[in-house]
Length: 443
Image (cartoon, rainbow, N blue to C red):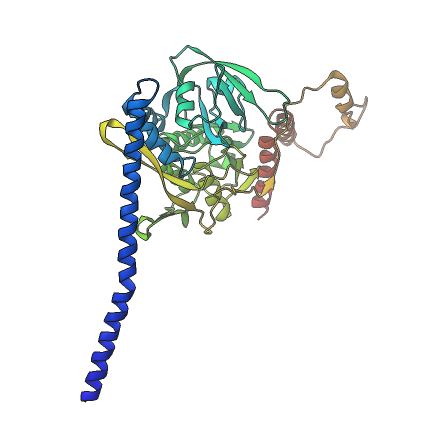
């Protein structure tokens, strides 16, 4: 027994010594890191003091500190940044769906300001600004090397004032200028309309109003169509949607799902992880659904497209999305300022991250430029049918009501065909939706 006790005591002592030897270097390392951090903070203070006292011109100390903070944040990733009081207020206004400016969502790439997407029915969209454009100058001032915040500030100004953007566009040989008049931007986050027997839901952003806008729009258009049994299916248009509130992306996804995970977010620590699930209830009552995306579809819109794709609830059509798979948290600071800090990555229900990869469509469909048809082409396209021949026999196998219905179906097909010259991707989506409807009716 004495031997056993001794062995136990020895084992305990050995364990203690092992622990002590293991934690000792860790404590020393942590102490060294803390010392190094304070040394760098002292270095920052030294540099700040030298600038304040020796720079060729007097500096604005508050602005200098804010620039230093912003530099620290922007060094982390393109989406983390510092917001002064005015900018922080503007950001909160934007999430409510109303703000002043050009109506353009931008990011930074290789030191240049890049357009993620122009917002629908805004000065930027009406002026022809496109997703993927690079803004190299604003009123003649070069943007290269400028922080994203400073670039955005430069593009802001009084409503009604004029601004000239110098644009570099892929496929265009030379940079060109675009003149835009600043205006009050009022964004209706979701617009719903009828195309033939299909209901098209155009969602341009995820603000506090998005889900309610979409829900109300669906109800009105279903009533206008004569009830859900008169609706063939739905198209959710997320093209050039730069994203927005995660909560709204979850609500919009949930609008078409009965159950299952919508999105999960994973932060640096396990306690920062979160999972959002769908609740019973489908606003479309299980009707066929098509989702449209392109390179301007980012963040929250990718959450929706990814969730509906993973659950096989929708066919995703278009081109690869932007690929922003990170979540930013808005943190208020003293004096009314705030920071936007990347705090998590999000994952679709299947566990995939779309960061830098984007959502790949089920059917790749490139957009075509609008085509103006010449008289010669129209004449070549014109066809003659048996019914055009003089003295042709009548079809007596159909009733007048059946003939009328057939004629209405043909007109709807012709309208969709004409749409191909204006919006090829939407026209393709309508064709796919028609096919899905035929299959569902057959089953």
